[in-house]
Image (cartoon, rainbow, N blue to C red; front, side, top):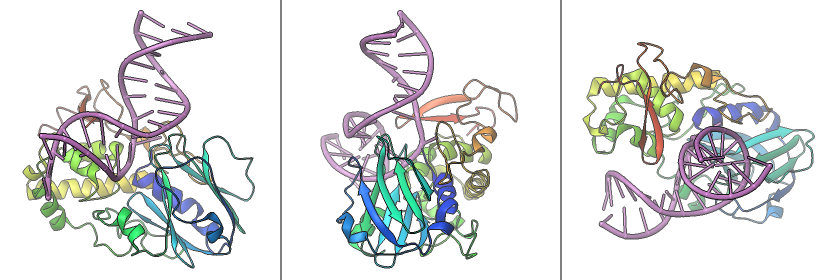
Length: 287
DNA sequence: CACGGATCCTGATGGC
DNA sequence: TGCCATCAGGATCCGT
C-alpha cells in the first residue's frame, strides 16, 4: 500500500505526539517480514526522541538505538491514547507514556526492526543502497522546520541522469527499484511518467537530459501534492489518526484503464511490467 | 552486475 | 452461496 507520500503522511500524523514519550511495553503478534532483532523487554524504559523517514522506512529514533518500520503492502500505523483490544492483524504494539503505537498489517510484508544505531549493520542492511530522497528540501517537518531526511544528497537532476544512464530496464521499473530514487511506488511511478510525458516502457538509459529533468520535476510535483492530499486511499490507507487520503481523486492515469485521459480524452491503457500494472496515456506519452 | 521472475501473505472481487 | 482464479500500494532472493 504505502509509498513515500503515505509513509510521510503517517510520520507527520504522530511525530508530535510521540516525541519525548517513554516506552512502557512492547508486544509482537505474528511474525512480520523480519524478526524484531532484540527482546521486546530491552526497549522498555527507552524514550522516543523523534520519527524520521528514509525512503519508505520510518525511523523511530530512541535515546539508544532506533526502530525501522516498513509498512509493506498492507500496513498502517495508529497512534492513540486508548486503543481497543488488538485484532488478528495487529502485529506490533508499543505502549508509551504518550499513547500506543500499533501496526496493523494483514499481509505481513511489513517489518519492525531494531537497530542499535543508524550506521549499524542492521540498519545498513535495510537502508544501505537506497537512492536519492526525492522530496529532500521540499517537505519540512511541521515542528522543527527541518527537512524530513538527513544524510543523503538531495534529488539532483545531474545525479538522476547519471543513475538512469546505466540502466537498460524500462524507466517505470527503474523508478520502482529504489536504488536511483526512493519512495516512488506503483501509483506515483505511473503518475510521474504521465506528467513528464514519458512512455513507461522507454529504457531508462534512453532518457535525454531534458526529459530526465522533466521526470525529476514530475516526481517531486506528484509526491509533494500527494503528501498535501494526505496520501492515496485506494482501499484502506489511513494515517496514524485514522484519517484517509484523497490523492486518488486527482490521479491522471492510475487505475483509470479505458477511461478518457483528463488531458486529451484518449482511453488510458494498462500494461504489465514486472508483474505490476502500469497505466499511461498512449497519446500524451508517445515515447 | 543487471535483469526478469518467483516469492512471502491475506483479503477483496468477479466469473461461473 | 460456494469455489476458484486473479489482483493488490513492496522488496528480496535466485537463476541466467
